[in-house]
Image 1 (spheres, helix red, strand yellow):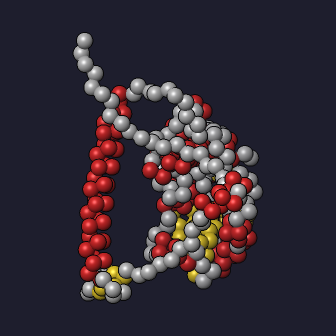
Image 2 (tube, one colour):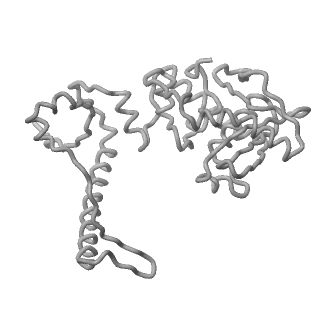
Length: 295
C-alpha cells in the first residue's frame, strides 16, 4: 500500500495536532505529494526497532502469560477506506491487540507510572477503532535495559473525534486545501512554496496577525537588548576570572576557539567558485504601507 493513499496509525497523532514529530501541514504535504515523504527504511534505529519487534512480543508473552500471534492483514475501516491500520500482534482467544515499541534510555521518563506517549495512545485507539477490538496493549523495550507493558481500553467518544478530524483532514488532502501552519512548519512551507512571483495578495483579514507579528518582533528586540545588558554586566563582574557561582547558579565566561574559512583567500586562488554552493530561501519581510489619502 502506498502511504499517500490512507491515514494510518502512525499518522493520526499529526492529524489530531498532538505529534511531536510531524505537523498536520507536514503530513498533508506528504499525502498530497507536494513534498516527498522521508525514507526511514535506511535508518539504523528504525531497522533495529523492526528487528526487535519479535523479541518485545515474546517478552510480553513471558511477562503476562498471554499468547500472541502475528496479525494476518492490514485493516480498513468498514465505511471509510482511507482509514487504515497495521497491527503488530493479536492476543489469542480475545478481542485485544498488542503494539511493540523500542526507545532510547533518554525517553524512559515518558513511560513512568501509567504514562504512555500521546502519539502511541492515538495509534492504539486508532487500531482499536478500526479493528473493532476493545483493549490495546503496548510493550516497550527502553534502552535495551528495561521493559514495560501497559494497556488502554477503547474509548468510543475519542475515536469518533479522531474520525471527524480524519475526515476533515482527508477532505483537505483531496481538495489541496492546506491545514493551518504552526511554528514548526517554516521549513515545510518553503518546500511547498520554493519559488515566489511578484503578485501581492490583498488579504485584509491577516492585518491583525501581521500587526501581532510586528509587535512580537519589537518585544523580542527589547528583550534581546535587556539580555545583552545583563550579559555585559555579568562579564564585567567576572573580569579575568573563570566565572561566578551563587547558591543556585554557576556562570562561566570561558575562552572558546573556532575555525573559519578565509573566503577572500579562496577567491584569490580561484577555488571559491569551484567549491561554493548556492542555496535558495525565501525571507519574510513586513513594511508598513503609506496611508492612502481620501480623494
